[in-house]
Length: 63
Image (spheres, rainbow, N blue to C red):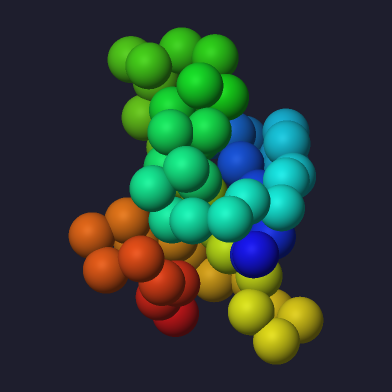
């Protein structure tokens, strides 16, 4: 299980959650975005105490 967080376009963390799989994390991210037309939403995953951008095409974070 990994810890994920959703960040809005202003840079505020709006939600954090432990999730079992990258696919479930991506679905949760889509549900958390308040406005699908607004650019700048992102999701990060915690690994070894550090946050990095979530890449759902590979299922791991990128830095």
